[in-house]
Length: 311
Image (cartoon, rainbow, N blue to C red):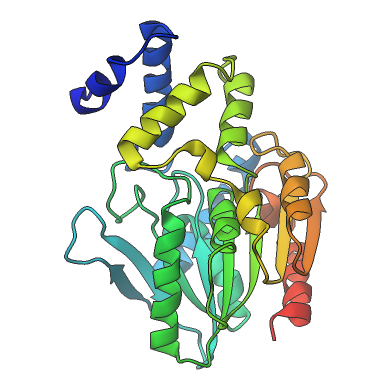
């Protein structure tokens, strides 16, 4: 264990046992520490593997540029791929990837938007891929990087840019949390696929479903560890709070059979939003499966939303 993390936090423990703290610390490391590989997908989505690798091959073969934020700060360096459209356009989609993924894992969405005539900017979030960071922040710090990415797109494409924000899973929640910030007028609309309502609610749900652990004292301890390591409480990481401030049109997509980010969170996020909004529940899709379940229907639904709101 890292003494710099554990020792200062062990000292004030009075109401809970050291055993509870150590369980929580191990959980924090499991959930928040970066991994330099993409974990295997769920059994439900393994049948799409051949298609997935075809998309990845396409993305690798397609002309792109590497963009960087904070290049002179090793601890804050963030990397992205910029893939220009086949024909010059002012339309750009910024795509946020999921938990323990990277920009390559979004290749299918990149290709979809590329075929729709968009430029695409696809970052590796902090703690993922080629970007720096030893810990995953579940979109809360990433949202501030995306504000910088938005400005980079405007500088590159022009002040008359039309920008769409799109994300899946943790990336969906990242987009939802970006929505509560002050955005430039070039950001026209957002699409969030299977984002969680808050990281506290998501962690509490997974504690019960996957680890058979109670919310208390584990969640407060994990939150305390995260505050010590990354500087924010898990209570801060809330899509619903951010969406309450959103004034951009947004499309929510969620699999009806999602047991990782339960579908009720889609309804929570939808209800929290006062701006123009649409909700599409893909009845038989599991977590992050909505595109794969029916790519044609997915593209059709995205296109219809953009024809209404991306103008």
